[in-house]
Length: 236
Image: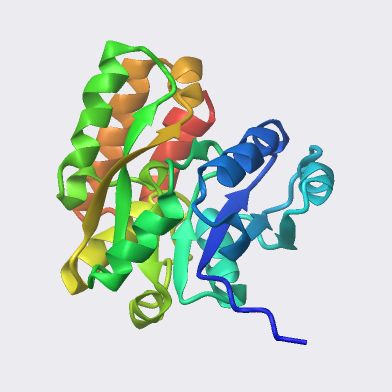
């Protein structure tokens, strides 16, 4: 028997109580992938208390237990990934048509890391305005909702995600990528949920995210960033 070929891309999805998003995520991955069979999909669970694990099993996702915290979850996924390309995706972000082919073509062209443009599943002019900036190739315009692809060798060269960050782990890691390598913005668009903005208020939430960016720029450490997040966003 001919041995199975290794996957081309390992998709790493950190989850925590994401039962409500898994069916649409599965459908989107199947419908949008150029070659779904060449993907390895790893759901890294940080201790869900809803039906996330049950539904993931029913949908034939590979689910892996981890300590809570997206940085820890994503590093665990990377450690178990089989492919040479890692693609970090949030459970409430839906990829674009032929996303896997776009990622492979980008890496083959010498771009070892990058993301997609992003828009929200909302008609809000305010959110449309901020999502427009996802096309700008500057580290201040980056965020985890845009998803992130990276060659595994570059991921480990940079040391992976800094697990001391409970929040802001995506931005901190992407800042290091910008210093080390070129960063590609693929012109196709991923769609991410606006639920946090709808729950907490668009202006208020964007303001608090801006403050976190500013605090980081001024030298605040991971504990200070989390304290602000917990007080002004998580506790809302």
